[in-house]
Amino acid sequence: MIKVLNVVGARPNFMKIAPIQRAMQAYSNVQPVLVHTGQHYDEKMSKLFFEDLQLPKPDIYLHVGSASHAVQTAKIMIEFEKVIQQEKPDLVIVVGDVNSTAACSLVASKMGVKIAHVEAGLRSFDRAMPEEINRMVTDVISDFLFVTEKSGLVNLKKEGIAEEKIHFVGHVMIDSLIYFTEKAQQSDIKKRLHMDSKDYALVTLHRPSNVDSKINFTKLLEAFDVIEKDLPILFPIHPRSKKMIENLQLQDTIDKMKNLHIMEPLGYLDFMHLLHNAKLVLTDSGGIQEETTYLGIPCITMRENTERPITVEVGTNTIVGTNTALIIEEAKKVLDGKNKKGQIPDLWDGKSAERIVSIINKELS
Ligand code: UD1
Image 1 (cartoon, rainbow, N blue to C red):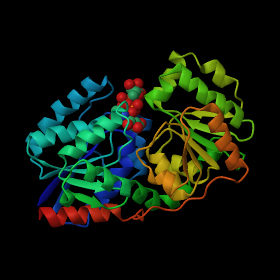
Image 2 (tube, protein in one colour):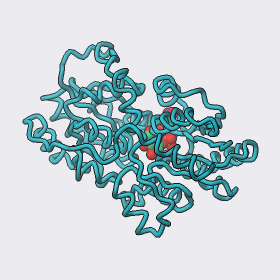
Image 3 (tube, rainbow, N blue to C red):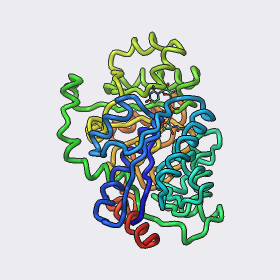
């Protein structure tokens, strides 16, 4: 029996682990144990996703919650060490680049347990991003590095990772997108939001570099102020951004925009419904750059860089930073039908989790 701890912590982890958990059901010799660190704990940031993604209740929940980076990472490590002692797994699977990813990998590596990193090799080359540190730390100590796009192969090779550890498998997040497309299309979220307009822009924003800085947040809001005159904007808001609107006293600026609709964070299926049908997406997320590329929907990324360059080279993504004029210019291009058209990257075909579990089974049996 191969015992595997599947680790999730924050919202962008859930749709990546779900297809892996499902793929493991086909193997009677693989025993998945679902561990939730509790990094994200709000009902709308966590529980809703378990329901929508048909994930089983976590077998183990660590109640870690929010704190500074050091405290959050340390708390996860302390609790996860006990889990490894108790469960004695053969493998720990971590996904993405959140604090839970790096913390659990560090613990596993010191306890001599093999680690698989799903979404390995991505690099923004911007060490001011906490996620970049998490990615680098996790990759260097992983035994299986599952890569979503070709840039990952190049980066890992340059960093001296042994080739036999690296596997180009495509993207498990796209597995979830494909698997749930029909269900997502059935969502009645537009009705619940009383949205009569067919066309709208969808916004997500939560990077500390954007929302913790009044200067940057204001520059983005100035762009939204122009765009919303032509296109209603839907903005499901991350708890961090909500808190910062209050702290930075931006509520008045927001209230002036009659076509900017801020709402609570949405579940996976409702959000996917809005994504599938959006005219334009403005985001600072990592995963949404990829989901829009798969769907062929124009994406304007409000960051200075991306660790997912395939979305720009092959997909529909454009990087604009916090430059108000550039954001407006790119949005206008979309409204005029002059946006670039993209293609689907290699191996983003809905079968990545099956590839991953098949490789693990072969190498650990
Ligand atoms: C984390 C990840 C980020 C990912 C994002 C997706 C790290 C370093 N960052 O950022 O890579 O893109 O998740 O959402 O791991 N909060 C709540 N309820 C929750 C969770 C958070 O209110 O369920 C609030 C708290 O005020 C908290 C703040 O959001 O302090 C930030 O949460 P945290 O988990 O530290 O980082 P995120 O910004 O969510």
